[in-house]
Image (cartoon, rainbow, N blue to C red):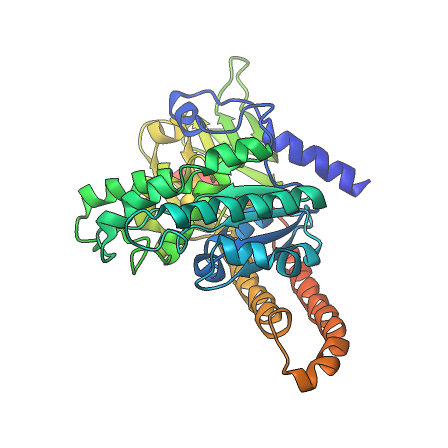
Length: 429
């Protein structure tokens, strides 16, 4: 019954209704429409497959953070099969051992950065890339595994040697992927096109990459680039924009205050034209904004299409107001801003942010176990004289480590469980 209840909640989030003010309509413009299906499903066992960019555990961990905080009862499992320097050829060769043997239900494939060779377009290399990508998709299809195909991020010309040349090679090299995805009837996210547009804009605003620097070496991600990639992938796969949303009307035509909530419960409302107070219990948590992410926000619509945690208060007197959560100030807004609707998802303080940040820390700790299981056990190759012993012990070691990962994952979900909070909007001092 609990699983059925959660599935209903999951679907309700996907088809949550539209908003009223013009500002908030713009914020929700990219929310998936009813009928567009989010790629990830409750209970999914997910494998992220790729090269060193995947092996960094940045974009993959931020996707995991989103899925965990947004759907805290979905019981996802997350595994990472990224290997530095790998290509689609390598991925196809290890697809059974590193992917299918993990019994996944959903896989993301992110190859191409190394395949292109970091120079001029190579038709022979592109032919191999296409063939091996199709080989992986064919194998996954036969195994009944859902796949999302991703083009890699565009290199940053500002800090990548020969980046100006390679970023154009990338465009031609990844061009076949859209048709391949159509052929296999799977979702495709053109990370290249979206991240290229973002870095082109950054180049105009910050030509020396002194502030907005998603890729420190031009292609591997720092935390800002990890967020840019995660956001690109999630929105491309129709991730819901809204965490939850509350609207308070200080005085209705009937003379009484009124509050309504989407994906949350609101009670104990008191309201005047100089402040409001209410309790809010959400079904999920917003992403905990990180300081390192801030330079990316102007190039990601301020995360309005991924992390909308809304509050609207209509009917306040003109002036400045502080929003408190459990007595802790989290933001200062004008009455006009509150009337239009503000996004509290990007604040970096308060009890809800602190809870989300603990979830992120727990995910990172857990992924240390995932990484060591992959590198130390799955990828371990014993010398011939020890092979029989290793083959005998490997299944037990994999099971033991997976049990520890599952226990750590259970703790992550415990930390991600939403609780009630008291919200206050009071005149700013």
